Every structure is written in C-alpha cells, then in structure tokens.
Image (cartoon, rainbow, N blue to C red):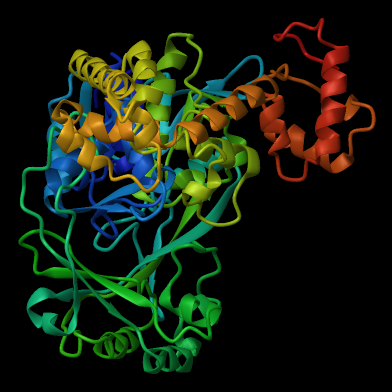
Length: 615
C-alpha cells in the first residue's frame, strides 16, 4: 500500500484526540486523526454531560484558546445549569447535559470541514522511531496501521482513552473492549513499552441505563435547567434551543444492605479487578462501604438525548452482576418497573505514568511522542480536551523549533492539571476540582478569554472572528467599569455601592440601563467590581510567587552532586526533572528545606548557561 506523509498523527478520536487534531490542523500542520471508527469520534462514553465543578472552567479555557468542546456543547446541549451559584464566582461552574447523538455528529462536522485534517479509519499496531541524539533515546518517525499502511510524521499524539488493552467487567463476565460494543487497542501498549515507557492499569465505570417509558416520573423530583442558560463558548451569543428536565431520586438502606450482601460477587472486591478507580467518582459499591452511616445517596436521572429513550442513572456506577443491578434499580423510587437497556460495567485500561512526560506533554525520552487524556492518568472528557489542545499545539510547535506552550498554575486550570500530573504524579485517576487551584479567584469561568485568548491569538489557535469578538467584549467590560466609576449615586461613585454585599445590583441596572446594555459584560464587570479587593490581593500574591515559580532549573542538572540534598529529594527530582524551582517545590517527597538547598546551589552556579549541564 502507498505510504502517506503527515506532520502530526493523532491516535484516538475521543475528546483529547479531537482537540489535538483540531489544534494542529488549524496551526497549519498536515494532520491525520486515526481512529477505529470515524462515526464514533467524540462519542460520549459515559454520561452525555459536559462541565461541572472545575471541569466547566476547563471547557471555557479550551474555548478561549480556540478549541471545540464549548462550541459543540452549546450546539448539542439539552440542559444548562450554573453550579455553585450560592457561593462566590471563584467556584461557579457551568454544566450541560448534551444530546448523546448530536454531540459526536456536531464534532465530526467541525473535523470534516477542517483544512489540513484527514480522518483515517484504522488501528495503530506500532510506533515507528529511530535513535536520537542528545537528551532523547528515540525519535518518532511515524505509525504502522493495522491494515499495513505506514503514516510517516515527526510527531504523534496518543489519545487512546480507555482502549489500551481495555477490559470490561459486569460481575464475573469479562469482555475485551474500550467501551461497550467496541474493541480494544491490544498492541499499542507493547509499542509504548518498547519505547521504554512504564505503564500501569487504572479503572473507571459507568451505571446502567433504563428505558424512559418505564420510569415513574411522578415519584421523582424535577430538576430544570437555568432560565437564562450561560453558554460555554465565548462565540455563542445565547442558547436558543429549548431545555429539557432531569430528575432526582436516591438510594435507601435496603439498597445498601442488598449491595453488602452481594459484595462476594463484586469484581472490585473479589480480586477480579486489581487496578485503581477514581476516588471522587466511585462506584455505588465503594460508596456504601466508604460511607456506612449514610442512609441515602442521590441518584440523578438524566436523558441521554432530547428524543432518546435511554435515561442515564447517574450516581450508581457499578460492575455488580446483572441480577444484582436489576434488584438495585428496582428499589430506587421511580424505577420500580424500570427496564434496564444497558448494564453498568467497569473498564480497566493501561496508562503511562505521567512523570515520564514533561509540561509540554511530550515523553521525556522520545522526541515527538505526545500523550493526552486518560493515557496520562486523568478521568473526564474535559480534562482530556484540555490536554489534547496543549498536545496538538506543542506537537506543531516542535516541528517549527518553537518554544512549547506551557500554561502556568496562575494562568489556567489546564496548567494546574498538567503541572499536577507531571510533577506530583497520580495514585488514582486524576479529576479536576477548584480546590486544586491555589489561584481560583483569578481562574474564574467568566474570565477565561481575558486570561487565554490573547495567548491563543499569539499562538495562532484563535481565528479572526474570535479575536474580534474578544476585543469587542473587552471594550464593553471596560465601558461598564468606566460608567460605574463616573456615575454618582448619593454623592459617591456607583461602584462603591455595587461593592456592598447587601446591595441589589440589578436595581442599579434598571436605574441606569446603559450599564446592562450587554448583559454578559455587565455581569462580568460586576464581578470585577464586587470582588475587587479579593482579586487585587490574589494578583499581588501571584506576582510575588512568579519570581520563585519561574526561576529556571538548567536542563541536565545532576541532583546527585548537590551538597546536603536529601536522598529522597535527589531521587524524585532526578525522576521528574522539573523545569523551575516552583515546579520542584511541588514534587512529591521534596521538602521546603530541599528547595532552599537547591536554590543555594543554583545561586552558586548561576554563571552556568541554561543550555549547559550543571554538575
């Protein structure tokens, strides 16, 4: 068969792969997206929902940098809710229930229409490489497809999701596959191992689905969407489509007793599943054991589509046997007569220990090999999308000998996530929360464009339409801030009144309608006014931290020769190879005294150029 030449090959058509391919192609790289099934690109393997606490912020950041997830969600969403409204804006987070059929269809439309991007339906059997000089052991030269073709390239992004030697469990039943009805990638793990990468096993799961016409909705609590839904994409003027309802039910002591009585048949507790699952999205079996005093766990019934006959039973992810799942579902109020149309299952899969990649998401030992998504040890569509965009950008920048895109912890939740992965590593599937970010008052959902769109414009991921929209939005916000400073109310600037916690800001908007001529700009300006003191305090904290955070550590430094550095710190720093003192301080096993020792050593050797080996 004829050989094909590309700049970047992306392996995997999930959310990481889609964003990586989109970013690389839009930066002008000849890109191939290789996937088992083109029609499965963007498929929502678990709940057809996007966003949530910490996750919604990532979607906004992906969008601010020119990515796809926000736009696709706005088009395919069927219910939109802003979470944490009762708390401060630092933790407000958009979430949307999406149509499980529309979402992949819309995403595929974007990808099919993307210049420089080819969609290739195949599996990848091997990674082609050759010896490399310098700090790398190997250099990527392409991929070998399962149909015998070779795609030659200089950079590969592996975004394999749960497909690397994927194995699904429902009770004692075991089925090879990355998700229900689809095969697994059996040889790619071997290819990564042959390149010297250490692999491990992780586990995730999904709950049963029930038929809509078998649910007694009269027994459920209705959960409507927001009256005025907030879009995910900064390009979306408003959400025009009608929203549909979700519903709430819950478990009971009878369900918990039944689960405990069947733990000897649960793969998680019989030894059948040996890998680690997510702590913050556990199975119902794990919830019952971890919280023995809790008599009820909430269950959310969420439609998988506007016209879908399937309801996702959120809150009871399980790998229990089918008969036990049937008993459990029948004990949930409203589901007494429910028909299960898809059984819950757990899936185990291979991943690469993330300390082996750097902050650009490229493997430290293999030039041109980038990893993104669950292969890096994360869970969730949103985390995958954020990594995919960064990997796609950096794969392209590598070809041009440009400095990689590295997002700081003070710039984006994406930066927090990647730094956590490569610096601290993981012990379980990583999930983003607002609590992971030390600067979350600065990393709000509403200002992702202010933080990142100018950077995207500089990189080339932000097109002219988005850039014009950003400039217009920034001007509108500045206009509201000026008016709030100029307008006098009882002899004082209006902004002084707006800062008072007991004031109803909307009454001033009614009194001065020019303030709220653009509702989005008014709301964003109001946050800046009301929380001015907190925002300024965090800005000063960020500025003070940047000097230490960004103090570079020369590549190739020999930690073994640093006097008085503890052995554990030496071993961990050697393994992680942090790029800065700030990153070194976050390495697991490194103490503040070790950081001080490192700083003293760097100061004594500051005459050494950043490109030289320090020893």
